[in-house]
Length: 151
Image (tube, rainbow, N blue to C red; front, side, top):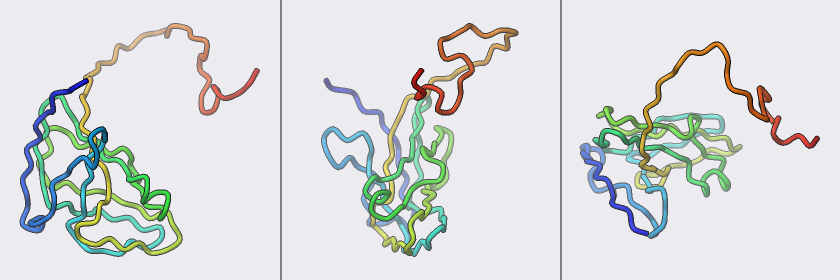
């Protein structure tokens, strides 16, 4: 099956010169790798909004989701505290990736290192209708962990 790609316009910023644009690593990858535009060391427990060196214009009706890289999470405890992050179609500032070090060692990030993945996704707009009663379901109001309990 073939899908028509959407076009996301990218504006390279001065500190992003020479860096690759976000790209898919394989033919069937869902996420595009994005790299750091700065050098830094993220201490254990530390957070930092890492510069990417570009801004973008996402088409109306889409968002770009920012997700952690599984290898960084497994090997070093590097993740995103707000995963998935959402970049809205009307945002035009520099894309910065908020990273957190959940590991027990400082983590060095060099300019050009892959730090996250970007996934373009359609946005479904919703409205809320206030009602007095909600329809009944088998789950009902069972919350956290309620679907994993054996009867």
